[in-house]
Length: 275
Image 1 (cartoon, rainbow, N blue to C red):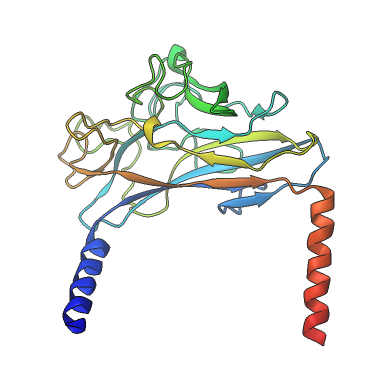
Image 2 (tube, rainbow, N blue to C red):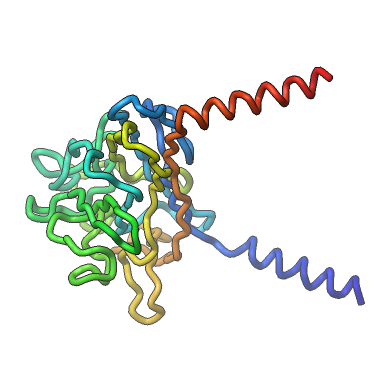
């Protein structure tokens, strides 16, 4: 009987492993080159810049490339003296002049080429909204300029007016469009940067996230928000549709006292090892 149960569990495990999924990774860096899911800033050093890189992956081998994703990045525990670094390109498209896309490089902020196929007007430009006291927390939220309400509020229920990531398949493609990106893992789609005021007393860690209800591509039948991947380059929007899982980034600001305690802890461990 135990062997039968073990076999059932093993089969169930294989089923879960075989289920394709999309992961949206919110990566952070202080130098724009070395990205991870957490960074440490020094306290009482004024404004420090943290770059954020949004990376998307699927484990679906049938996919040919990312189709589209609409989302609203957020940064929690925002203060009045923090600042969003201006976007290099806040509106336009892959083929507009000036361009609505940026290269995948440090210091370039906006939708990364070729994922700006949707053209935004200046009225729809990417904008850093500050939403205060959302369940007791203040947030920076990046979306189109006209979407002033927090996620779920007036005019912000479908997620359709967030950061619109899309690349073209063969449909609608012209000679001026950038080459199709065939990556399925670690696809870099968006960059932004924030300046964090480390002189604010007793700051909590800041979480860089993308709330589930802030995603677009709303499936009105299931109520789920999806990321689209192309299964064929002759599809208009992508027929592989997956519900994303978001991995947040954390910005830590240890106080000088906490750093000293960490140092003492390290000394204690070292002494124990010598003993």
